Every structure is written in structure tokens, then in C-alpha cells.
Image (tube, rainbow, N blue to C red; front, side, top):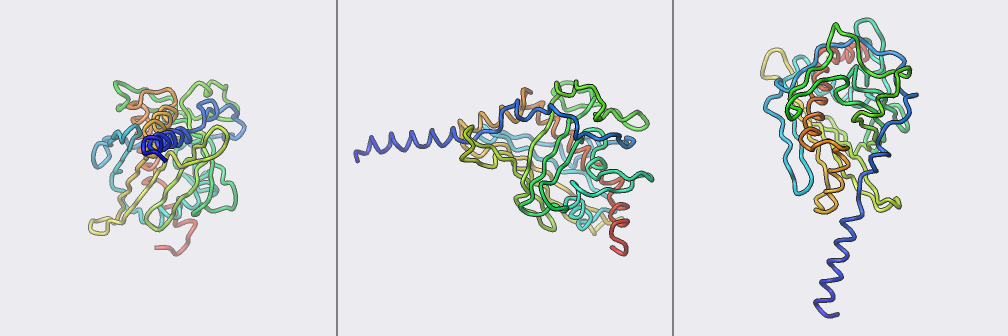
Length: 287
């Protein structure tokens, strides 16, 4: 085969491959049904802000994709065993918060989280598939590029959406995605969100979210550090343009990164207020 023809075929093959993987269309990600929403919500707590991170979060372009990194502030009296237990049970267990028994996914974020459904089984593990619905920064006011947010906190009423809420939540930025647990161990969990060619195949994990944690026993009290990394894209130039555009869901990329960073900071920052007590209640005698 002539060299020029071979190169042309290879280029055409690469172009076709780059066009193969895309996130579901925005209309497929939007939430249109609120029947899975909670009937009621717990009282709000006080959220951690972005200023509590060990360093400012970064949202770095990687080709036409992005890499969002957050290093959360130290969690006092939280251990690796507690965090592993939390991830394993986050979609199915209930916990007692201030005398009220609520789904664990609502303890993680009382306002933003709307639903968590495990596809099979009762415990999250490697290979599990779980569908999350959430509305990042529900009823929060942002400023500038979105890095500063003011959100309803205790003792204000919980603004999170209920089954009975008017459907104006359809107009908001939302997450409605089925994630697969790509790996899960004592110190790390990785979720993958799949994107497929419109015909259904081939597919790839086009957004990957990884949480890693480590114990800090050198200080008093003992504690833990947690890092969250969101990788958007698969390293294919033209394809990653589609992935990042649909991941942003109509928002400016910088604003989208800021919203995700603020939501995750609130979400995992909540662990400080409830996880230790919930873990000890569910695991009597655990250290």
C-alpha cells in the first residue's frame, strides 16, 4: 500500500475514533422527574468554604479537557476506616443526625443531594453502578467568576428540593448520571462516568472522579486528609471538546469548575460534623 494512502487511512481512522466518545446530550442529563426526591430534608449545618482547602483548588486545562484538584482541610477525629465505610454505604444506609434518622446521601449534603440509587446489592464496591441526582449549590449566590459563594446555612430553612417542590429545578444546573466504581480500596475510590457514541457503542469513561485519603496520626487529635480529583476528557483533542462542553452543561468552564469545587468542599467538609458518630453507632466497639 502506498505510504501516502496508508497515512491518509490512519488519519481518517484517528478522526473517526476521536468522534466516537461523547457524554450523553445535555437533554439526557437534565432532571425531568422529581418523584425520587426526598419527602423531607434534615436541618442545615454550617458548610466549609473554599478558604478551608489546604491550597486553592486548581482547574487545569489538559489538552481540551480539564483536571480539577481539591485538597480538603484536615478532618479531626476521622479515620480511613470511617471514610471507607462511608463510601461503601453512602447510597443505601441511613444514619442518625441530631436524633433524626436520614439517608446517608442527605447527611453528605442536606441541600444539594436529591437521590442516590444503587443498581444492585446494598453496599458500594468495585464494579457497582450508582445513579446520583444533585443540584450543586442549591439557592446559593455567587460572585465574580464563581469562586465566592453564599449559601443558606443553619438556622435557615433547608432550600433543597422535595417531591412536592415546583418543577423550577428543571432550569438549574444539575447532575444526573450513573457512575461505575472503577476501583475501591482502603485509601481510594474512583468513579467513572461513561460516554458513548450516539448509536450506543463504543463507550469510554470520559469523566473520572477519584478520592484518596490518608490518616494523620502525628498531630493531636488524630485526623485525616482527603484529596478529590475530577478528570474531564480522555486525551483525544476533538473528542474532548465535546466532552468538556457537555460536562459544563451550558456554563463557562471556569464557573463550572468553581461550582463543582464549592459543592465538593461543602459535601466532604460535612464529614467532620457527623461521620465519626455515625460510624461508631453502626460499628459498636470499632476504634
